[in-house]
Amino acid sequence: MTVQFEDSYSRKFYYLRLSITDVCNFRCTYCLPDGYKPAHKNSGFLSIDELKRVVSAFAHCGTSKVRITGGEPSLRKDFTDILSMISSQEGIEKVAMTTNGYRLAKHAQSWRDAGLTNLNVSVDSLDARMFHQITGENKFREVMAGIDAAFDAGFEQVKVNAVLLKDLNSSELPAFLRWIKDKPIQLRFIELMQTGDMNSLFEKHHQSGVSIRNHLIANGWLMKVRERSDGPAEVFCHPDYVGEIGLIMPYKKDFCDSCNRLRVSALGKLHMCLFGDYGVELRDLLQEDKQEVELIARIQGQLADKKQSHFLDQGHTGMTPHLASIGG
Image 1 (cartoon, rainbow, N blue to C red):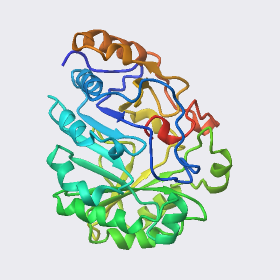
Image 2: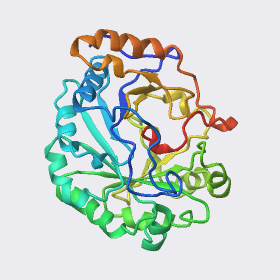
Image 3: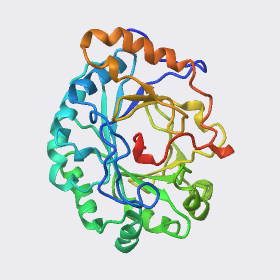
Image 4: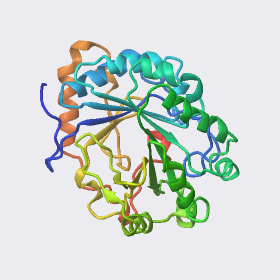
């Protein structure tokens, strides 16, 4: 290991969220309600060689977990090759992806064979009509079949992401709890976050996860100890349930104290935070293997400017127009 990536608040970074495309084929109300529209004119998304140099630099500096994000990452034709490349990097112990699940039933086994170790699938409702309303796509049954296929392929646990939306899916907690009673699913409720394009939606549908947290604690759920490469969820388990519940509450006090992750966009920009004000260009240092020392130095230099908080609770949304733009 060359040097451990660390910021001025002594936070160490074991976790890289690597976007490989900002294209998505769903039209979720909280992200891309009008569908995907290209917002850039350049030479395209990072190539597999450029992605390899990103991962190599992070692995040499203590990162052990890479999450592949989008957009919808499986839209890349070379997605399986990207999985194989990342999983073969020395020091990388976990290769995760976040997906809308529409290709999962067909490819779960090949993705696992290529080195995928952890899987997050977005399921915002267990009601097919509400799922359609939120995602803009009538793909509920295909996504659920994909989760079954993931278990058949040997994934011991599947994480399921549901964005908590007041007056849409906020009454579905009992149904979700029944679903995970006998299934090794970690269901993660994610608070709706305010982004540049979504002010009115946020005002109408934001709901705090605190009420769910209080309900869980009152009903015998216990919080699990967090591991160093875990994401930001508070995870709860119950002796009567095979599944788990996770809560991601970015408006909670001190949410950023345990930050352990950095982001690189599909266009090769380093982002200190999902809600940061700028991205740092890395692509010029991703053209040759011999540039790694300089690449690491640039990343480490930028960590000195990483802020203590995202300041979401103060109404700050940064430069992020929507969650697909730099990998959610």
